[in-house]
Image 1 (cartoon, rainbow, N blue to C red):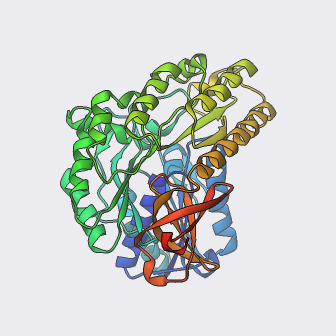
Image 2 (cartoon, one colour):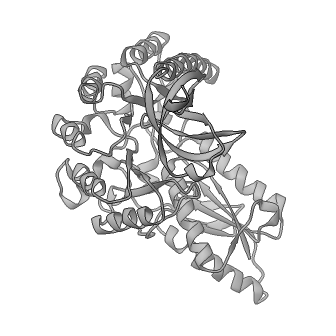
Length: 438
């Protein structure tokens, strides 16, 4: 039988899709290139916004429509918040995702025995508990072959007013350290040279076990010592987690890439308070300055929500100025989308056309900053991990996560880190040459 996967949402979702793919392969399934050719279609859903919810349901309907005989499997966060998933045959929420193959095979068995099964699955919301457990997948391979994600934590305890994720994912649950290190070692043996350490609230790693705020740093140092791993990246970080001790500890992780995604959401203190974020814009900048003291050429990216409830034009312009002051290398911009069940959804709303207009304006600012950051590397030597080949160019990323293209068709370079010189920039990418060709 063949199985097809479609993923919405965050990097953690992508990791879990890759994990599910491995489970299906071990069970004897082949991977289909399209939904039309699949006996089973797995949609890993997202519920972070109302729009994500809508897209998740749309994809489930699309899979059922494309191939009426296919078995539609819904995974992930959206299923946890829905009382019924009407376009799915099988549902695996965030609490039972490791049993996705088992549930699918059970459904196949029942159908093969002639049982009349109608599409649509009831799924009750889970209770929000004070403690959750980490669901272990084992080693998860990324199709890219050169970079891989390592998930070390699930869940969040913060309850920001716009966010449904603590309800869908549950509280912080940290992965066993030995399992993390074994996965990193397995990946290194299979030729992966870069790992991205991620989670829903990765800075909370160890918190559920009573560990201090440096637990993540200690884990990174152990990954750093694994032979074959040459690069370590971090997933999204929370500003208040970046204490002086945390940042100084990061500086001792020699393989850590100078690329930090530091969640912001707004540059206006009034809006930050309404979001229930636990920092001010000045406290955020303090952490940015400390990072730049240690990593002067670092790439700094962030997320910002435009048109949050009660945001005025003046509030928005404060955010725009903050973005310029912080000198982000890229901003991931989202117009605010109501999520039923959150505090923010009950606040006075900004008209949608205003949200979209502000988002568009901020994206324009981000585009300029991204181009400036990339063009600032022209004339410098850098290291690029070669991942793909396209149209006569090898492509990969610098330590700062700038997309780089080098004219070569030497396929033996895939998976290797090469030293190149940036000679020009195009939008958010750099064109490079090998130094000896200059």
